[in-house]
Every structure is written in C-alpha cells, then in structure tokens.
Length: 131
Image 1 (tube, rainbow, N blue to C red):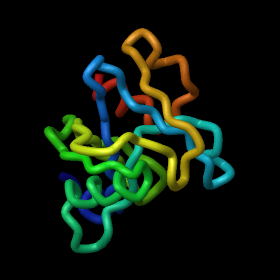
Image 2: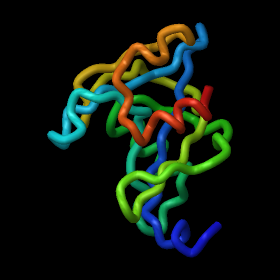
Image 3: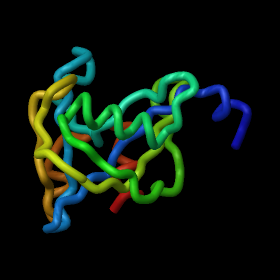
C-alpha cells in the first residue's frame, strides 16, 4: 500500500448476491449530487474500526439486514480526494434488504441487467471487479 492509501478514509461496500445470483444495487437519495444514481451499499470505516465490522454495521443501518463478509474483492478504487473504496462479497445472514438510510430504492440485478442502472462513476470499476 502507498502512503496515500494508508492516510485515506476507507469506504467499504458490499457485493451482495441472492441465491439466484443477482447483485443488489442501491439508489442514492442523498447527498443531492449523488441522488438518483446507483451504488453498492456500504459506508465509511470509523477510526479504530475493522473494515469488515464497518461493513456489517453499515448494512444493518442502511438496509436493515445482518450480513457476513465472505471475501474481499481484489483492488481498491479512488472516490473523492482522500477516500478509497474497498469491496467485499457478502451473504445476507438474516433480514430482507430495504432502503432505510441514504437510499430510496433497491434492485436485485441479474447478470444481464447489471448495466441497466446508472451506477455512480466511481462504483463502475468496483462493480466490474465484483462480477
């Protein structure tokens, strides 16, 4: 890792798949400059928090589910200056995902439909890597 990565705020995201192999996409409702675009759900790692623990917490807060990180998707992607995105494949342990915080819609996307939504530009390479 570079010094820049070490100093960056890590944003974790989940590549959540259902039993039919569909990927969960979440449509942003905030902030205004991101509203209406789609992303992999997740959020910022708090100081002193392990990334996997942050991901579990964020999915509980944003989607109302309990999830288990399974494996990190290789790579990391720059977001705005000072932030990097890291992605984990995750399984839903309990609950049905619903848009509780920062999102107004969720979609399970079949492989043929992955590119049918308007992904945030910074999520596109992460989604490609998660596939």
